[in-house]
Length: 144
Picture (cartoon, rainbow, N blue to C red):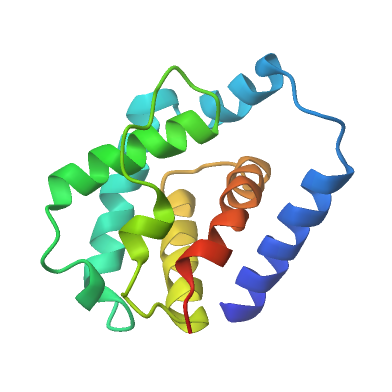
């Protein structure tokens, strides 16, 4: 799974860097591949289930308001995919400050997200586009 994760992240970042700038219509194709906002919400439901069950990172989410977090993630991912949503949550560096999130924690989260996307039949190309857009968050989330 770790090899798949690293390959997917590397491929997503490389492919994203090689593509011409995306147009709104192209972005909507990816948004639609997730099943629009309702599909993203289903992915987030499964993602949250995966996170809570994951012994590597479940402790970070155990005391969090899951309903609120799922709604925030749905809006954040929707906005990242240029869907008709606005993310109004806190900046990622503020949310994760002081949590001492490691590279291993971050990788576990991405693996759990991939499992949720696979379960919801999100095409691999759409998964890669989302991961490429999420990749810059790595530098503000991982502390150790």
